[in-house]
Image (cartoon, rainbow, N blue to C red; front, side, top):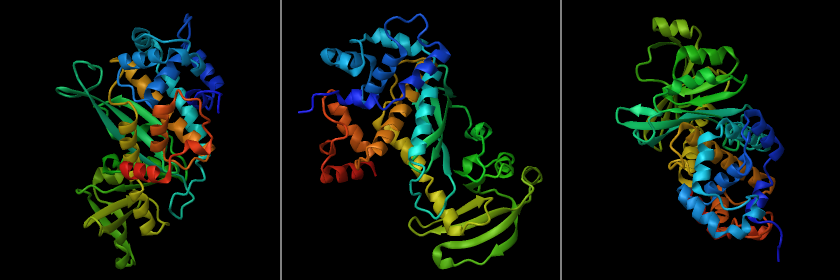
Length: 384
């Protein structure tokens, strides 16, 4: 019989705590704090994410019921909801944001060799945002519409392993296009975006930095054809053209040729028009690259369904950002554990098992920890 650490303690051992302590010291997170330090706050918030706790009262009740096991989980004792609420309000959210970025860097290194499903050696990113609706009277710092509040989670997702490489949290009014101003373009990388990010001055900045972009054209695009390459219409490619922008301002902002690809999606009986600055890849590869952008939609759906970022443990901007960044850290941590232990189970399956066994003293790397094959297939169907 396994008599070692609880599963929660084993999960926490995968975290680089020395890095966390340096970040806490950088922002003075434990300044004049004697009992409830940032490490405990992070452990409790991570526990809440893994076990689907809905509120501070829910967290308090659950931890109180397991008071005898808390010390072995790295938690000094049962914490009252007022103590946790004060910590969420006062501890700088940048502590948890910087720590999440360290975990992201570690995870991206582990998934760097993941198969993208395309004949492409370049790094490929998907850029998009998701909106989390809030109550304006409770969250007045996050205006969105006249009688509605919201926060936006802008994400740059590395398509190899579906690991977020950059995240920015804003109020609902912040336009998606501004994210392009915050990116540091990576030469040779592909940035895949929907038509909301079509701004020719910003796209030209990506082009001059040596990066590639793939997006969809807007219906009012004013351009002229310069050259048409021969295509095989049976493959779904209707045309592959080199174009120049006609509009005065658009031509000033992007004075070079662009590539326009028209693709017939027979599955949905829909014609898609792509715009890119890459002239070497086959047209079908460009279409497949844009199709892979769907991974970021699945990422947003996954974290909204399986982590706690739609109901918040506090109402201040600091508390909301702390909770979102902790959720990101938990997602990346589970991905790191899955890769390091070579677990066959999906992230959804791992979370389901952990949610009911965190207090158990069971070896995390034991083959018996995995679900039976029929249970795994059910979980895949549920998340597809």
